[in-house]
Length: 155
Image (cartoon, rainbow, N blue to C red):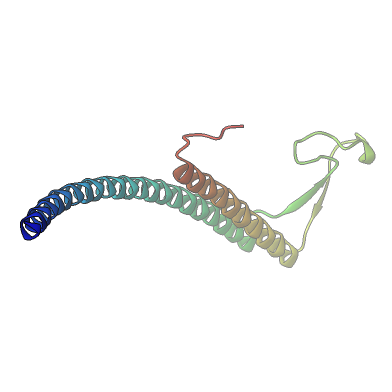
């Protein structure tokens, strides 16, 4: 009798184990499908971020190339002597008169060729740095948007 109870108990144990193994396998399969869906979403976000970064790269590179073309034109013009670099005293960069210099017109100072080249070198360096900073700011914003899932800044 005891052997019969043990056999029935053992058979029940095996059947229940097989049933639980089936449930466990179904749960694992469901988790695998969910993980695959999440991985596909992450890859799609990565592709979108890479496309946005590539677009920003192309725009920044074009801006740098345009600046370099303009500076080459100015350098050639200075080298040919058809134009020159002059400093204008009496105006700030927005065109308004500086009250400290008086309002009697504009004083200009023509620079020697070596100094003109150095001014253009500085202009080139400032332009490149400005473009790089703008690019890095846009890149940081795109990275932030890609990781936060936010389409814009919330302030």
